[in-house]
Amino acid sequence: MSFNKKHLLGIQHLTKPEILTILDTAESLKEISKREVKKVPALRGKTIINLFFEPSTRTRSSFELAAKRLSADISSFSKASSSTVKGETLKDTVLNLEAMQTDALIIRHSASGTPHFLSTFCRSHIINAGDGTHEHPTQALLDAFTIREEKGKLKGLKVIIVGDILHSRVARSNIFLLNKMGAKVVLVGPPALVPPQMARLGAQVDYNMDRAVKDADVIMMLRIQLERQQKNFFPSVREYRSLFSLTPKRFETARKNAIIMHPGPINRDVEISTQLADSLKSVILKQVENGIAIRMAVLYLLLGGKERDVTD
Ligand code: CP
Image (cartoon, rainbow, N blue to C red; front, side):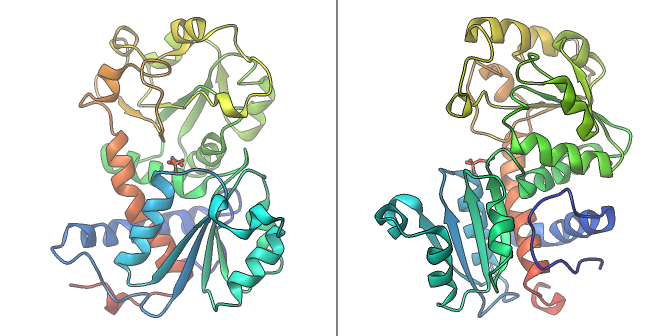
């Protein structure tokens, strides 16, 4: 196995063999969640803390369940119930938590670069669960895992990522990962949310959703992040919907076996129609299911799980 990183800070600095190791490890760990007793002793005795300074449904619960299925002890911490509201600095908060002999810290923060900052002074393994508009590596890994499961490969596929690319850490991590794996990435949305310079990340840009959808193998819709927008990036939700929403009429023109993805949370009938989000073409809930296997793989590889401890 090819994995000797101490932290998971992003996809940008992972190699293709390291990405493949995570995907392959997740594939072998996925069946644990289907056992009657969904638990193996691989990380028994390890202590992990989830530090979420931003809201989360999927990522936080998924890391918690992944840690528990590997028998690690995990404690979850949110900004509202911590002493940061009393003025404690992030560094002090983290040093105090590390004094409790943690092995790994999983961090989500609104400031890009926070996981990297922690990695400069922490003894624990640092895992990025989403930092500002920078990266969300485990989301891109679970997306790649889901695409590979559905399509049997990543290389050569056309993946369109539609929506608020400018503010999207999910898009950035996906662009890095899909490029490394040989997929073609096309970014779609209004110019204010998909500036032409995004092409420098290694993707094509297309402002015409109808054209982009036609030969796509994977249609990845993103949430319109109203909370991150300092100004209006498009004139109205109605206009956005008419130009970029994934509607049944638009999807009819897509390839017969195209799949629909979304990292969640979804804005129903804004970026994606309810009918399509709930259709058999949608793999949105499979993405969530696969998130546990990917996060188990990341914890297992970083914290030194033993193969003999995961076999039935
Ligand atoms: N995809 C994702 O990061 O969802 P949450 O914000 O619910 O964790």
